[in-house]
Amino acid sequence: MKFLHTGDLHLGKSFHERSLIQDQEHFLNQLIQELVSPTSSFTSQNNSDKGYHALIIAGDVYDRAVPPPEAVALFDSFLTRLKEKLPDLHIIIIPGNHDSLRRLAFAASMLKFQRIHIASTMKDVLNPTIIDSVAFYSLPFMNPNFLQDGQTHQQAMIQTAIQQILQYHNEHHPQLAKVLVAHLFTQGAISSDSERVFIGTVELVEGNLFQDFDYVALGHLHRCQNPGGKQIWYSGSPLAYSFSEAGNQNAFLQVELAPPSENFSKDSKLEFSVTKIPVQPLHQVCRLEGSFEDFYQDKEGKYSQYKDCYLEISSTDLFPKENPITLLQGRYPYLLSYRQDLATANTSSATMEQRRQLIQDVGEHGAPTAQLFTTFMEDIYHELPENFSQELELFKKILEETK
Image (tube, rainbow, N blue to C red; front, side, top):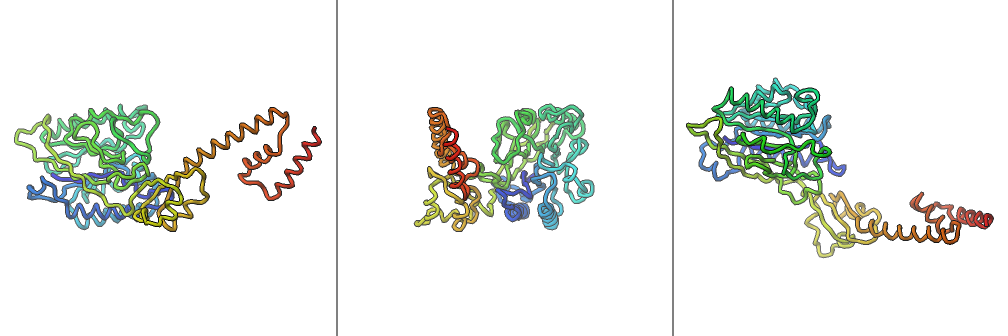
């Protein structure tokens, strides 16, 4: 049994106000290519059937509950092309916290005839997709009151759902292996800036809840990782969706489950292997550091390799530069962020010291000064008005009259 695990597609997402539709189409094309022509692994070389039995998409198909039309069209095209090439492939999809559960599950009953399975209710959770000797249980992201009114904590809801799944499985399919597909935040996992994490620990779920499953295909966190038990895996997102994810190797996960032995029982566990299939992005996400002149001049072409990257530059200059992105985008067309933290801190410190001195002077002399008035106007308008000289003269006159 071999399946491909992915999730957190976030179709329709923008990155610093730049549409990623072309980037997402690029990785979906790679996903189709991998499913049609699987990458060989050590175990699959010894298996006469090297094709995939299923594709798992573990939530967050879209980036918003009401996705833009181009995102819906992209996913529709992806499913259509994939089923044309692989009509027997099972596609298992669950809604994530970014998806609208009801919208994503539109036409789910009809799509089952095409082997496209979308879980949206507890009835769906207890109706596994059975492929050969494996039962796939799909657990969508559980919004408050998903199971019953008043139940809002992720740990409690998921614990209840897992108990029901295991009870159902032991009663109806004890001879089958069991795989769980879920969208959640398990303890011990590493998050990044682009996930929408709730306040506190309301989302955190203990990994030991999943110890009875042969494999747990998780979505929600964007880093490919294996927290907790060895069978618990996040595929991560196919693209980096924040600069905090720069340098991550995004991947699809090829999972192979060994055939069950003759004495397989509900307490048995299948051996399995996980192989990371790297995703080649249309544009790498990179973070660089240096002065404005380093990047603007770049006489030696040190940074030319980054011209096609989605780029964030952290400036080492101590004074701010006006419109740096506009000035640099001729050389780096995909520059999306220019951070001037050092300059801001330096300027703020100098400005605060200047303000303290001015206030101290006022305290000593007992009256405001022309310099304090000038600073005040700069704070209000960010730059002095065109007729400021006339206003300053009027201010000085008023000062003289009040002495």
